[in-house]
Amino acid sequence: MKILSPFFINLIRLKWYIWILFSIFFCIIVITAIQNFHEEKILLAAGYSLLIHFFIFFTYARYYEKIAPVPKKLMVNVKLQKAKLNISDILMKEFDYVHDTASQAMNDRHTVVNYFLIITGGTITLFGAFLKPKDYPDLPIKNILFTTLMAFNFIGWIYYLKIIRLRQAWMESARAMNHIKKFYLQNLKLNEESCKKIFRWRVDSQPAANKPSNVFYYSAVLISFFTSIALLVGWLTAMEKSLINKNHQWYIYFVGIYHFIFQILMYSEFLREVNKEND
Image 1 (tube, one colour):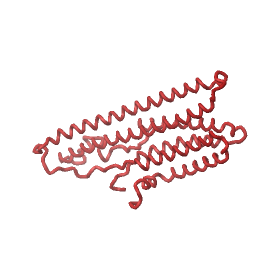
Image 2 (cartoon, one colour; image 1 turned 45 degrees about the vertical axis):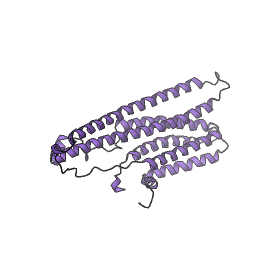
Image 3 (tube, helix red, strand yellow; image 1 turned 90 degrees about the vertical axis):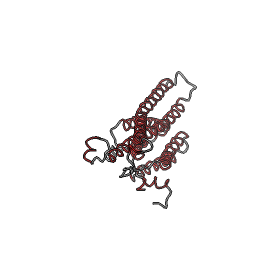
Image 4 (cartoon, rainbow, N blue to C red; image 1 turned 30 degrees about the horizontal axis):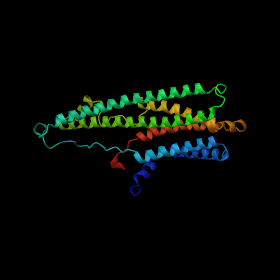
């Protein structure tokens, strides 16, 4: 694998079932676009759906962060009390810093979700204001609806990536704190059993970054749900004329369900930790 660039290595690292699901989705979208090539909104919906996938795959392959493992031995040759610089004070300051960054990542998660919910409420309000054609006879209601839904889905992806990045930031802070704890424990020459009694979270017991059923995961699920509904309704709007004469409803529902599953799977993939030394 070392003969390949990191970009392609990261793409190959994706789980096989994600590629299978995407292949099925790709075929359905392309076939739908070919069958309805005369419908402008369908072509736009198909193009957007594929482009956003390529954007996510590119982001994953280009910016995926591999984890630098914590060294097994952190013993120092010089006694702390005889060091020219007070190592203990420096480490405590760094511990306080990473503690603050972990708290900030959690607070930022709340802020991101709140802003997203505000945008969601604003979008629903916009629908309620404009979905009355008799009040706005000259207004292209369906075009506004379609454009708004696609834009909302894209914004949802950005917030979704923010949640992932905040989870990564929190995990890095937690790793840094455990790194410092391990340094102190080894230099105090405490055995492993004593470490387990002192600290519940250690380098070897820290929860996985992609662990489900935590606040970051449920925030991602919430965003995925709303963005999937937006894409589903956007496709229904785009294929309104085709649905009158053809039974293509399953296309649309597949797109919505697939979008939700794809986002949840990619959440796990973005946060699946791989050590640098194992790459």
